[in-house]
Length: 104
Image (cartoon, rainbow, N blue to C red; front, side, top):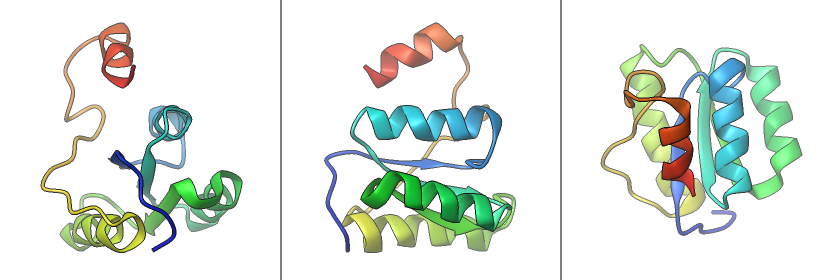
């Protein structure tokens, strides 16, 4: 385990677009982040850039094994057991301004 964070987020689709922006936002807000995506080299690069704040699981989030590994990684890397996670756009239904207030 590298470091323990008071808050940990799981982000699927972390290698591009909204997912990548969400990872950056969570990291800048002090979260430990576990990200998944199909582009392993991008995930490795993101880990190097964020030092101890980012861990990753390569694969498609539609695969239950990938989701299981995300939760296992949260426990192993950040010392956090998690019981649920939300993924944009499926876990949140609202506008971007309201979402930003959640991160404040």
